[in-house]
Length: 286
Image (cartoon, rainbow, N blue to C red):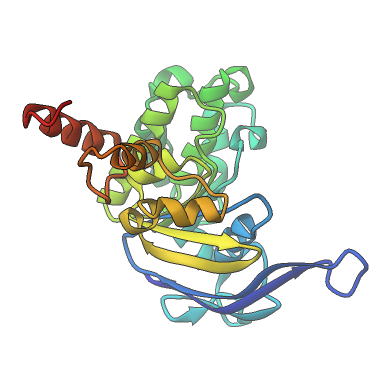
């Protein structure tokens, strides 16, 4: 299910003294099954872009096509968009409101026209996919869970819809290391099963390990779009733009400066360790 973004502009509070241009002439295509990371400074237009893709905002100019159809046309069925595109906002645990975990996860399924049995099966699947024991959590209040558990319940509510495209806005912010790893492993599994992942994150290490393609925005403009390895290994350019890259990429850059033979495309921890081991075993030590 390709997503085509064609010459999109978006301006907040247009025509008022508070007018602010968020996106300027952005065009890109997202292919089926991609895992895309979106980077950029705060205020560069990342959140605006994903809200436009999800149909929560309408562009001032330009088109957003899903399967070749304009999602903002009067003829487009918005229910179809809700079935195909799911979005998880930063700190989704703040959106929990139902009396039980099961009811909260089921809320988003009510407008899909599913039978009660199919809805129940999806809720059970989503919660178990997020690591819960369904029978233990189904009847308890989501508000009584820990912070990490609340987030997983909120994500389960989006996952239960089984979207073909899953959009994540800073999904690992505030999670502990184990929670981050567990969540990112889940995104890999979903992506491997065919779900397209679009993830906004300031965590370049996470993007290096999991995203296959990186998009970089600056002041509402698309300035970089390419393979994650190509983008994140360009340490000098990212420094010029005052953007970070992964820690392994920065360490590799420092080691090369000291004359240690580390490849220019190293962006992941295991790659760096592997090349350092090879370097030491090869007797290339002072």
